[in-house]
Length: 95
Image (cartoon, rainbow, N blue to C red; front, side, top):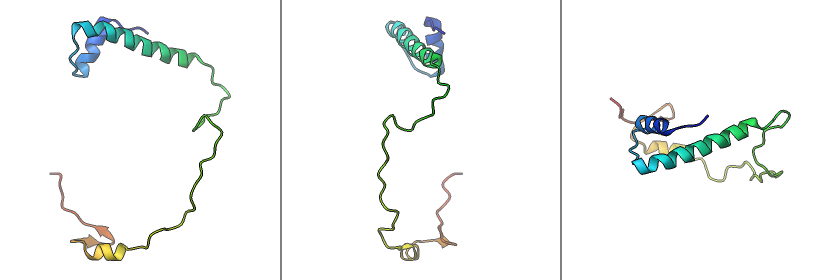
């Protein structure tokens, strides 16, 4: 898929972006390069390859799952202007 000048003009109009005449040719070139890269990536055979969260075979070091601060919920809810059933009540801001 390739884009031409009119496609870039339509995209700019839909995005409400003002592009000068000199920039349109640059955007045609850049967007076509991006689309060509996407086509190249789609052409790669990925059957049998499992998805990875990270390219390196590393394990994330995790800290122990322990509470490090005391539970002060009662203290903070005691000074709140309005609390109901353990939840803070706030004024409605959307009309």
